Length: 249
Image 1 (cartoon, rainbow, N blue to C red):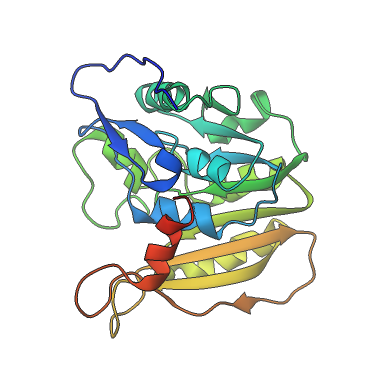
Image 2: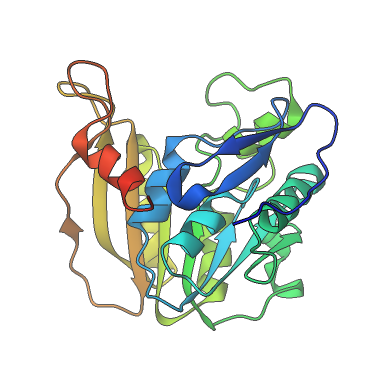
C-alpha cells in the first residue's frame, strides 16, 4: 500500500508499530507511547466491526491498534492540541482518517462533545500517578501524561461510565499498587470488574502494570488471567509478547 503524503513538523519522526505496517507520528518532546499501550490494545475486548472510544488518546497508537484488531471505528479524546494533531495526521498517514477520528478535548467535559451510553468499548491508558506521587516532569506535556494533572482516576472512570452502553466494556492499563482504588471506582460506577491480568517485567520480579476490564451492568465475578511476562531471563521479549507483534504480520 502506498503511504499517503503527510507533512511532518519540526522535530517529528515516524515510528513503525510493526503490527499491520502501521506508522505513528511522534515528537521526542511529547509523551511517546510504550508497551503499556500495545498491551491494552490487545487486552481490550473488541468484536469485529465494533466502535470504541480511547480516553487520553495521545498520538493515537491504541486507536490504530484497535483498528488493526478489527474495530470499525475508534474515536480518540486527547486534551493536548499538539498530540491530537499528530494523531490526526497519523490516521491520514495510515489511510485510516475515516475510521480513526480525534477530538481535541477534555474528558472531564465529555458530555459536551460525545453522546452517552452508546459505545461498546471504552479504553484508557491514563496518567498513573497522583500529583505529589513521584517525580513530575518539568515538561508540562509529559507531566500531564504521567501524573493526574488534568484528569484523575475518578474523572477517567466517570467519563467511561457516561460513554459505555449497558453490557459494554471499559478496559484500562494502570499500576498494581492502585488496584484496590481502581476496583472500588469501577464498582461505584456500575462497571463490574470481569478480567484482570498482572504484567511482570521479567521472571522473579514484582508486577509493574495491570490490565483490567469491566462490564457495565454485569454480575460480580472476576476472571484473573495468567501472568503476562514481558522479558525472559535472557533479556529478550517473551513468547507472549512476540505473539502480539506476530498477529499483525
